[in-house]
Length: 107
Image (cartoon, rainbow, N blue to C red; front, side):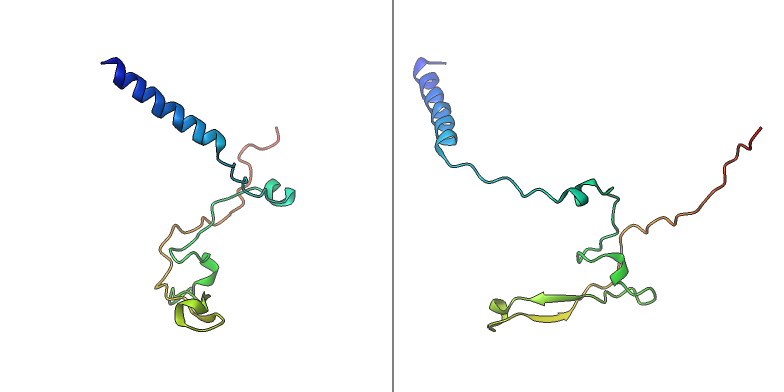
């Protein structure tokens, strides 16, 4: 390697570091309230449309939730609501919770 390419590479690296130091920092994401942060997180059955399994009909599997269409997309001043077009929940089915008595008895 010739010394000119080493100097150019070092100058590019130093320029990147200086730009990173001079740019304003982005604000961090807001922290959730302590009650929400302390709650145990379990995987939720979310469909491809973003709605929970409880919004899907048990028999027809169609989504019963409504979605908002912003007015700027359809040329109106406000938003409109319409039924979600999801054709059915296809995600993992939640496991039912059962109580099983202890196998070991008191001895």
